[in-house]
Image 1 (cartoon, one colour):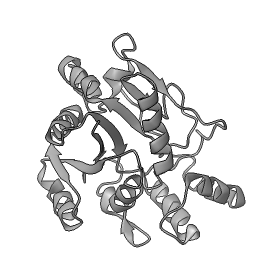
Image 2 (cartoon, rainbow, N blue to C red):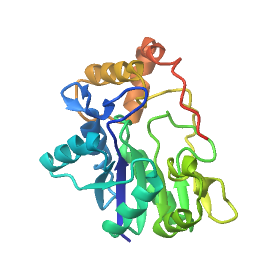
Image 3 (cartoon, rainbow, N blue to C red):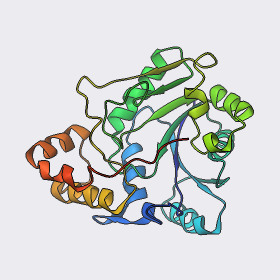
Image 4 (cartoon, rainbow, N blue to C red):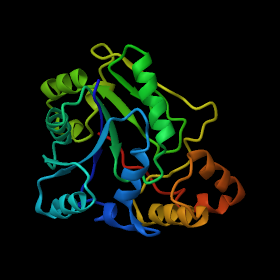
Length: 241
């Protein structure tokens, strides 16, 4: 089974344009995300999937400079982009990661993939059916068969933009499962949508003073320095359709 991690990335973020190329203590956010998730042992290869918009030419050049596989597809229909990328890279299993998660933890990603492999299912996540991990560790794993079926059947562009909503909302068509953390950390926000999120992540990296650390290390840091949580605790996550 060829397990491909697809990181979706674009320059045209509504709330923080160009965020994926913004600096986080010496490396771009995209590089932080790519390097961390690539440490997951259950992934065969990692690619960046961006759009065909001219604004994203920069991302393709950046991927080429770093020798990262890059795929370009639809800007609005992200489900189409994932489906085409999965075909191009002959994926049997797809791991979906967004590029605004520079604290993504490969051990968590591995746990979701291994759970998917163990349970005979179409879709697995650490945010389904309930979120217990910090927002920003989100990993979704699904079969090519499920991706292809949703690509054929989902006719709503507003949900196709979010790739897996059709799968999640149709439990009679797809076998869904998830993993949960024993302690609920869902109140912690580690994704980057606004300048305050970026400030939080930069502070974490600067205080860790090293490139790689686990998500448990970040939890420990926040217990010692709870004022960090206040930086972006009031940022509201964009509602899904």
